[in-house]
Length: 166
View (cartoon, one colour):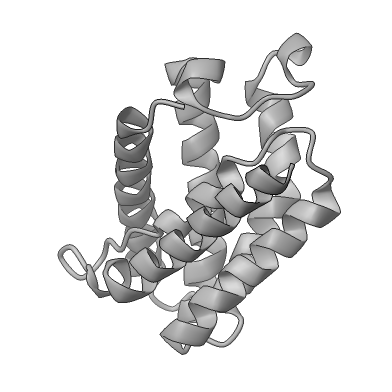
């Protein structure tokens, strides 16, 4: 159990540093920015209580907010993702395998994991970018940034999943 938490803390620190130092500076065509730090929330076991997951999500988002100078934007989007994650798991995972599942390509299969990943990333990005824009005056640009960032984030997470064999 202690090793499990140390492992998660290591991922927490690594993903926050990667997001803040490198990925926040990546803007493909001015629209797509990968938000790889949500990978930690998406990879929690399915039997983790929602309150615990939301605490992890809050501190993860707050850490990114502190270093990115975005007051509460990442924290709110990540907490929303953590709140909705059990619903997404119930939607895309067969009922008999939901007891103690760590979402991955190997445990869920490629297409259910991809659907889970796309919906989760899109909801997170929709919340984050809607708060950032704080206006629907340029709805086309907002939707383009949501879709482009979601596709880039999904691509990055699938690459990490392909490299990581656990």
